Image 1 (cartoon, each protein chain N blue to C red):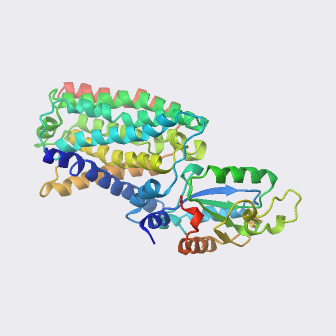
Image 2: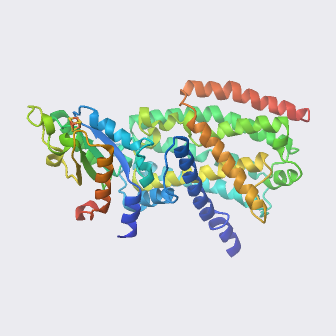
Image 3: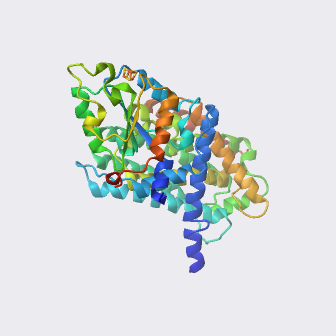
Length: 144
Length: 309
Ligand code: SF4
């Protein structure tokens, strides 16, 4: 593992995009930041602007209106950026998969690096997903 | 020549200030974590953040906006902060450059980071950044007069001497904080520093929750790394400046190292606790706070100094 990659993995800043979510996944993501689970131990921080983000957390089903915004966010993000699909909705569509405004699971719209299934996934599961992401070999086109 | 370059770039100059600032930034985040019953980031976290931004991330330029100004603003902010830092650290460590009047130069240089944040934010062409910049501007207008009054009070206390070395030498037998006016000035300067550092009661210029990092919203990659570096530098040099003004200097020899480190850690601890126990105020409230209350306290301190307290 090179030095640059080491620094990158040690300091992942998270940006949270909630699609047409039932809001339960959002709350579980927030639970990761609270004292009980505290992902700042791994140097992760929630940031408010996509320009500072290293990880794009996407949860909730993506409908036609969200799709435009998600694509725009992905385009505006400084590369390399990792995308994590959280919850059954983000991974496959979940209970909204047959809705007529559904625009496809996240990986049909932008490339996804990790999936965290569950409805909603527990904070432990989200942290386990992040650890898997950290151990993963980086994809070639991801490095700027 | 070689010795001067060493002073300016290694110790007590650029490298020393940047590394200590990074460590202090970790300390600030760790204390914050403890106050919230969390574990907090690892020791080298600020350096990881800085190197990641500098080496790995892409720098995106705004499509609409002045690209040159946008990129130059962080460079200027680091330069300003670093010049102020060197001018503060060189007399603090007892190196005599024969420069009288440095306190006034430092006062001006300490304003440069905030000014460049405004310039960079306005150059980015983002409406939220413009809101942040306008708030930062109002904040500067409100705290700068207070800071000037406090520095003037210290100069008066030192018998109208405008040299940092003289002010340090005068405090060798009893620091200025040991008097009523000294304590009042300490309160004023701590709160001004809070605003200068953009920490919570006065962080409306980069309020994450309402205007998503305000002035810095468009910065990414290396440009944002330089802004981070400026923040680390400011977090170190402002407490040292306060040490010199009121707490009897910042000497780094023999047993004095222990006291100096404790002084700086104590000041940053105070700043962190204020930051964690207060809500963000509105910009009008901040202006009223500085214009009326802080200026009043500073003027009372000046009057007390005139009467010899
Ligand atoms: S995965 Fe389940 S909990 Fe999460 S947003 Fe979808 S329906 Fe809600």
